[in-house]
Image 1 (tube, one colour):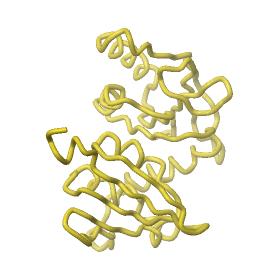
Image 2 (cartoon, rainbow, N blue to C red):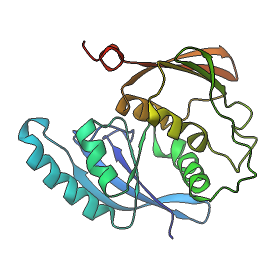
Image 3 (cartoon, one colour):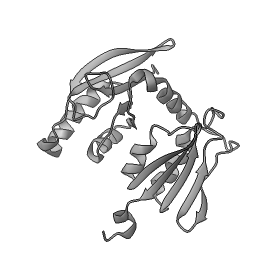
Image 4 (cartoon, one colour):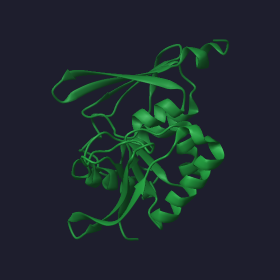
Length: 211
């Protein structure tokens, strides 16, 4: 498979949302560098309704071709689910392609490798009713066979917690979008130059069911 990643960029070359206006660029890895191979001017009008959104998203997926990794600054629920239907991985990142393409590809490669039963993957620990804690500092950059997605994504999607505290040396670029889609807010606090605390808290409407 040819390594390809698509990104929605504004006129300054940084990531933006699909409402744009901007340009979707598909990058392909050529030896050790990422090169743009096709471009599509793109923008969504959120006032045109769901049918038009689906039509435009269909055009976007056709433009992707075999590419199934997409980076945007932010993605709404409807946009996210249209991409998820075609098994397109969505990353929510603020920045320029040269800053994130290689990191995204490395994490995607790690996630695609089947894990044997002998791999020791850390799991969140319940420290109080509904409150969980996990440190992933020990795997970030030190254990290439285990990615932050493999450790956290399944647990985040279960939503069987009120709060999750994660200690890391950098914020995983996929986690903000994942937590939002699962009904959580995320706050971050830098504790040390190489240590960040993330706190995912279930939205009050989600937790009470009556708000």
